[in-house]
Length: 433
Image 1: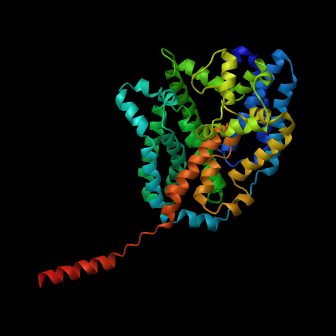
Image 2: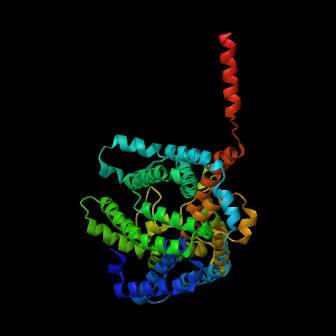
Image 3: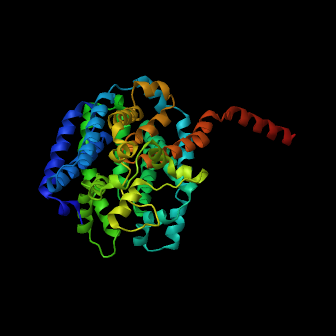
């Protein structure tokens, strides 16, 4: 059942509109384009609050529900205080764009990105039906290589970064790079990624934020106009892909599913409240550590750990699921697992981490490598959306960076054409005599 069917649809959509507009005006000076990831994040916050409003209207406010609302309020306050709007130095950004190593590192990231597609390519070969390709994301959950997954989540952000930088700096490279990016997005779409286009749009939005001294207001206005059309396209594509998730489903049903997703950012909170999660989901610093790092701890220690979303899914459906499923481990759930007493401190800490990753004066001093800074910026809101996944993704990105990107940045290939030609001519002259 969709949430707009489960709760009062008018309350849900009016609440969503109210919270979204309010947050937009509150943060309008910290937003730099219509495709700035901050806009989607604020919409995500509005979605969670709207679903809670629908729940309160139908069932009344309880202590846990009030606690979830307080998490959003403390986090939004911290985000407003900590987000930094000061731009980077244009001269420093010019050095980044014109770094000769960008071409070499692009090909390395491209190769890693292609390798990360290996499992999908094998799956597509073994399943010639295109309809089956869209179900790949569900097949991947059942069995996928941990190393392959780390490579997948770790390499693509660097591939995006170097592609964008070269498109910006090298006019002659633009057509082939746009073609390569298009193929990359198509592969994401065919492998079941209904948010693939939206992900690319947000990456462009963060690039504009990161290199904003290079974008005039006139240019931003042009980008904003194009963005509206691209966002509509992304929603339509998402609806079509969603329709493939179920047999005999229609595009109309896929669109209804996309509308439901607009209201489903707080689905884990609704599951927690309706199933009295406080009586079943354990809390405390130890439980928080297991919930965040359990995927790694289980590999080196005899620790029994089950993600919070997985627990809530089993509570909601009254079954034991053999695989990890369920809602994301979003900020309010994290705060409750850590302990309700820690809500103000934890939310302010997470808002500071988000602002640090997105880019502020402190992060500019501590993170001198701009490709890494950009990739961390792409992940800036992930700690709020799913802390467990964020830990996995950032480990993947740091592994790719320190194993592949950083070493190749330090290797310089010196090639003197004049010396080579002179040696070849001398050799030819010697052989003729």
